[in-house]
Length: 120
Image 1 (cartoon, helix red, strand yellow):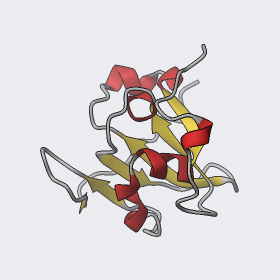
Image 2: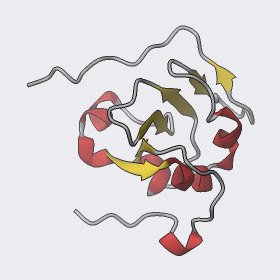
Image 3: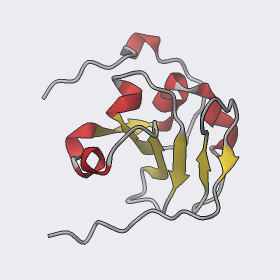
């Protein structure tokens, strides 16, 4: 399935370097919603930063379909929402969210990613 991203390759500027890859949902990269939930888990490989970016509007069913997300360079997602940049050096296990009309991210301490990787 071909996807039409909100930003073209020519619109991506070098805002951050050497962070590696991340996963972001189509609600950000295609629908244009800002990042409202971000967390950093153990990286899947040496190219992965561990960062995961969501708009906060994704349902459980949406999240279960891998076609609704993509792998991107962290710089690409920083271009979609530069407000993530100050948080990118946060350690693995960090979780941040924006709720309502908040302009800033707040740290979340009562949430951990589920481990659904064992589904076969």
